[in-house]
Amino acid sequence: MDCIFCNIRAGKIPSYKVYEDDNVLAFLDITQGTKGHTLIIPKKHVKNVYELDEQTAMNIFKVVPRLAKAINKAFSPIGLNIISNNDQPLQSVFHFHIHLIPRYEDDGMELSTINNYGKFNSEYFNNLVNSIKKELEHSAI
Ligand code: 5GP
Ligand code: ZN
Image 1 (cartoon, rainbow, N blue to C red):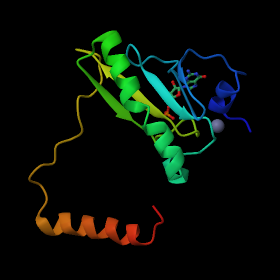
Image 2 (cartoon, rainbow, N blue to C red):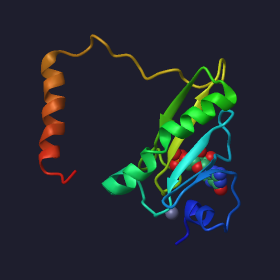
Image 3 (cartoon, protein in one colour):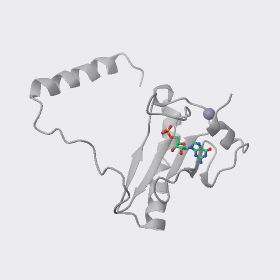
């Protein structure tokens, strides 16, 4: 399979590894959007969050606090974003990954999501809850 991150995992493509265990690998993002921008991947090829099983999710997410703390101590950012892009057109590498993006003053990135506070009524919120709950009833996890 021609997957960049599987090739990194196999050592066929070089990377700057910061962490590795039996199930997970973390390495510097090649673009370094901000100083210390790091990716965490499962060693197992999983396309995106929609294909992620619970155990693999646990393996990846359990190393997030440790890596985040290490990046925080190493570079003293003003904060840190945890992002995962899933599916086209957001996702560009189709092997699930989490971005750890330390943030700095004037780093050129948006600070937060759009604030739509006050624009929607309770009916709108309840409809959203019902839509998600309905799907949860049909799902295994
Ligand atoms: P996505 O857009 O799928 O959320 O993020 C994919 C990320 O993988 C991008 O931030 C991109 O810079 C990074 N990336 C793509 N190819 C390579 C590579 O060969 N090596 C490393 N270290 N990162 C890569
Ligand atoms: Zn892969």
